[in-house]
Amino acid sequence: MSQQKLETYFQDWQENEALAEEMIPLLGRLYRKYNIVPSLYGRSLINRSVIRILKNHRYVKKVEGTELSVRDTLPMVKAMTELDLGPAHVDIGKLGVAFKRSGQDDVKAFLETELADIVGRHADTGMGGEPKDVVLYGFGRIGRLLARIMIEKAGGGNLLRLRAIVVRGGGDDLEKRASLLRRDSVHGPFAGTIRVDHDNQAIIANGNYIQVIHADAPQDIDYTAYGIDNALVVDNTGKWRDEEGLSQHLASKGVAKVLLTAPGKGGVKNIVHGINHDEITDEDRVISAASCTTNAIVPVLKAVNDEFGIVHGHVETVHAYTNDQNLIDNYHKGDRRGRSAALNMVLTETGAAKAVAKALPELSGKLSGNAIRVPTPDVSMAILNLTLDKAADRQALNEYLRQMALHSRMQKQIDYVDSPEVVSSDFVGNRHAGIVDAQATIADDRQVVLYVWYDNEFGYSCQVVRILQHMSNVSFVYLPREQH
Image 1 (tube, rainbow, N blue to C red):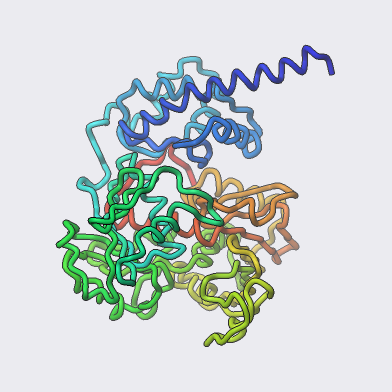
Image 2 (cartoon, rainbow, N blue to C red):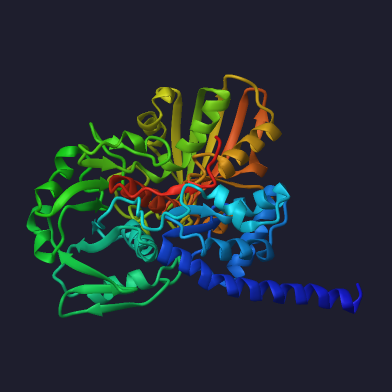
């Protein structure tokens, strides 16, 4: 290769870096001033580095076969800042590809048509009015990730305000609580600054004032004493899972509703966002966000059932170990879970297969399930062994699932990867409920096997936040609109 060719590649890279740098403040303006959440085929562009923005553009080539560079998207972003837009999630990648394929040359005119629903609507919040107070009852793995996500989203007028966390103890643990939020062995450092207000028992994270309340039971707390009212309490403890137990939160002053981050029992609605969240009514005061595994498999199962029909199937979960297991062999009330999580694959059970029926009644009685806990700290896999109503070949099945991941109403829940080299750590921090591994798909007439990765911590936490938004009447328009 000639020296001139080598220099051309490097010069092109530098020019793209410069354009991405120019794009960053414009994306920030769209987010903070107009409540526009910009993305590239579902990959967020908010608070992203130059390199991440360029990688997100490269992702478009992988999924659409069409090259999309910052040279294509920067003019679109500039035009969007001039359109006085109302709040929405806007996929700039999909708009960019559509513009290139349209053959048009007037970016602003194209956007005025494609974004007609929100052009000139900056004055309309469309997101439920007043901010909603949120309290995290419990501050373990899920609680801290929920805090990170809500703090991250606060800059765009999300209208969910994290006001307090409730933990056990005597009040001398603020520094440790803040440190656990600041540093995470799996998910990395907190994106921002954190300081502790010892005098007022609070943590200030990126300017968000979070009251730390120490209590041993819900009835011990008067949230109104901290200026918190009509709040959503997210119970991350799993201590209570039925309506009677969770209703203890409703007896606390200042609480309006409760969301459980575990499978609910009895009459508690188990909600998988993107599937049955429309079943939540204003009268529902206690809701469950189901389990991480249920959230991972239900969207894929619905997609397959809608297109091919499912006669029956088996779900095998290969699950990262959790804090419930022992680090070394010791007594545990559960079978096999007393053995060292770091040294063993532990065969156990999962209720996820049965729980599917609560979100997808049409699959009631059609699925069995089991689980193996493995020595990794995060990211799990569900193996779906299914018998279908009609035959499906591997290529057609994968293409259908790819389209569902990119262009359906479940695009926030289903992701898709087609690489022979990916492993579990590649999906740490993935915001989807589950990721279909196309390379692993097996299809033989009506018998298919699908492999679905999922970040059982972060992906699930994103699903929980989506439910919180729905419960708070925080609703965004998603543009461009999808046809599926």
